Figure (cartoon, rainbow, N blue to C red):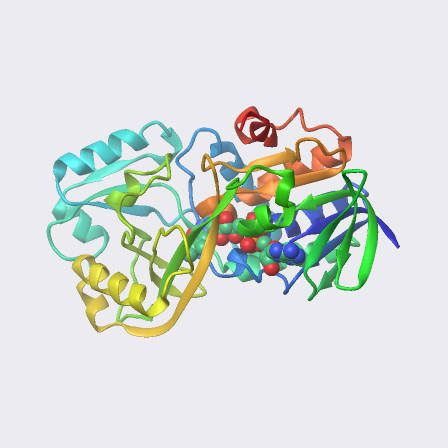
Length: 366
Ligand SMILES: Cc1cc2nc3c(=O)[nH]c(=O)nc-3n(C[C@H](O)[C@H](O)[C@H](O)COP(=O)(O)OP(=O)(O)OC[C@H]3O[C@@H](n4cnc5c(N)ncnc54)[C@H](O)[C@@H]3O)c2cc1C
């Protein structure tokens, strides 16, 4: 059996890329070890949010359009407004100033009275900065919607077996899923936080690392009006270097109301330990979290690249092997547009049109 393009990984990146490839006439097979949205794409906060990075801003804007097209009525027409929380006026001013780099966010500084008026669940005393971003979606449903469109465009899904790459004279030419082997014209690696495991010695160590997120799904007497994000996390916007291991966020998606989220490197974190810490910290911001009913605790890895930006393009030294990954904590918000870039590169056989800040050519410099 053979296929034009074998896509490995049925997360938002793999499913959205498969859709685009099939629309452009390729015969495509998507493989996943588990199922559609089995990784981060089914277990995240579902907030379509500005990436606060000039290199990926246009990916976000384009992804908002693509999500709107694929989800239709299921995608909000306007952003709900994201509220960044600061301890004092100086921190709030510096957060607002940093976000003025992106005029579309229309940052608005709020004093403590205005902050509480915007979000009555908050404890007193916080300053705020309101940003024009934040479209809540159900992450699993969003990914499945891309997969469904892809099926309708003729894409085959082979789920339930881990995939390995098959090489001939050093070049990847086929994939092996369980016992079955399939030759492919091109192969796309879109395995999220496990990109390095799949690609092995074809890429430098640590190209994409797991940044572990623990999120606590809760029930509160009242739901927040806006996504709430602690200033320590907001200050890291763009760089991705968060000094606090468990910054407070309270994000309300149609799937779950989530207190979160950790930013942890290394081993998979202990959910019980971290959920207790997240709830204790969260109660300082939103007092009713102290009485929250816990529904579930989710642990999942963000696929974070070495420089916190997506990696798109040909794997160095390979003719027909491509990669798309490293979207970190913004893959739902930027991934659909990344998918278009990588699909076009695969079909043209040339990744020159991928902007240098996002190109896999960055790997050759490492
Ligand atoms: C706690 C948390 C909260 C987040 N919140 C947000 C948010 O609010 N907004 C936002 O935009 N982003 C958010 N993200 C980030 C977002 O979830 C990811 O960037 C995005 O889902 C990555 O998509 P992906 O397709 O690259 O990877 P994944 O969704 O992880 O997909 C990879 C797939 O590859 C499969 N796979 C792996 N290895 C193999 C193999 N060898 N063979 C076959 N299949 C394999 C896996 O089963 C998986 O299905 C969050 C992430 C986390 C962890």
